[in-house]
Length: 533
Image (cartoon, rainbow, N blue to C red):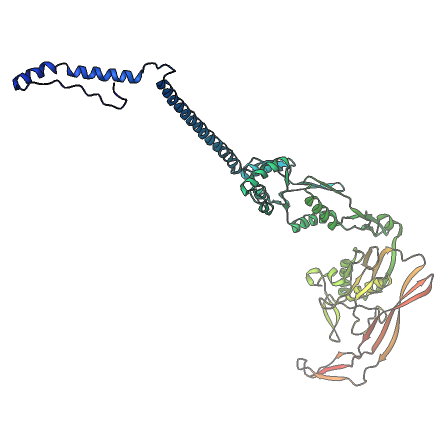
């Protein structure tokens, strides 16, 4: 019997020495040799694979049993190692999957959950989606629509009148950064920046973060809007005025007064700013204007409007001069001078021209009497001066003639000349005055109507002569080649010079209680001048 590792070798037959016989036997004996070999090999392999049962009590059985136990232990150890390897792979795989899930969460290109901007939840949205969501939130209050109501008028301030700018992009950048930044507090812990960011995402979901945009505006634009409304509301009161005058009955009708109103533009501005700052874009501002009563009412005028002063001067028989006086009186009459207003004679009449109907008449020019268009109108301005002074008007411009006039006292005349010399006065009273001027039957009259000076009160003018200067007895002779030979004529008459003070005297029931100096008139002395050739 062969051992396990022994190779099977068939026995060789003995061959005869004769070659021929050896050859024949070789063919005969070795014809079945391959089958024998194969059969022996198969028998040996069958015995090896299926060994015969060995009784347990035999030594061979014990050795076989020991050999099988070793194999089982080896197999069990291999199986354990395999299980350990599988467990290790699974154990290592699980944290990696968790990391991948966390990384996917952290690397999302969206804003963390629990982030609110202006009350709108933008968590889980990209910045573009969040911007759209906030744009939609603006429509909740309809944009800017602040209603301003003053008295019975209403204005609406919208985005068109006041453009607003909102820092949405900057706030969304802040919202996006939440949970994506580390903290100095984590440096002292074992929490990695990655883990910190992951935990922060869940922290904001449990503890929401409120962010707010800031709306900006141009304060100067707000002030401009407030100014527009202020100008629309504010208006000065309009005093009652003279509407018509009946020359026959000397009675008036009056236009009624119109009260004014006023609001505080700064207060409106501050209220608008306050509404914008507290984001009350659909707020309502209610204001009431402060009424401003008129100083003069139609009833006051009706109760007290009357003649307060009148003055009349006598004219000459010169038709041209009287024509000019009449034209100037018609230009002055029916004029209303409101409180605080100024009346100008030159402005009322304009330039005295032939086109307006003025004619040549005597006038003073360079210390001599000459004919000029509009000569004589100074009588109207002088008459008006006296009436205005006695009506308590404030005299602004008044110039005396070169020498005293023969139609008024010294110190009570007022010369005019276009455009250099003017007569003007201001109505400093609280009520209007009405001027009536006319020429009739060689008389020039000016009447001033207004509220009464007060019961028993009156104003008169008085003059005081300060000095007198007589001209020299000798004349001045001047040659004038343009005169015919042998001609001698007077160019300037000798005239005495005067200095006169004029006073306005206030009386109550005829008793003087105040006197004020109104003006000083300086009439120059004029020496006689004679021309000859």
